[in-house]
Amino acid sequence: MDPDVQQLIGLVARWYWQLILPAGTILAGVMIAYGGIIYSTSAGEPTKVGKGKEFIFGAITGLILLLTAALIIRAIIT
Image (cartoon, rainbow, N blue to C red):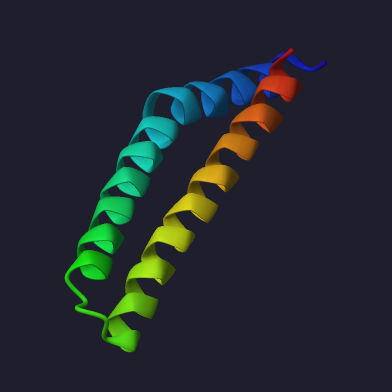
């Protein structure tokens, strides 16, 4: 493999592991907490219940995509 390509892959991997993965994980946790707050304070109002569930589902989906990308990057590196 070309050394320039290897350097680029290494740079992207470092950015991902040191910046994107931690920030995305923290953001997903915050969004899950926010969705939980909306859900728990909805008092049974269907629109707020749906909004809370939507935030939680979206955060979990994003976290799954983030971790899947981590697996792909790890497979490319090794």
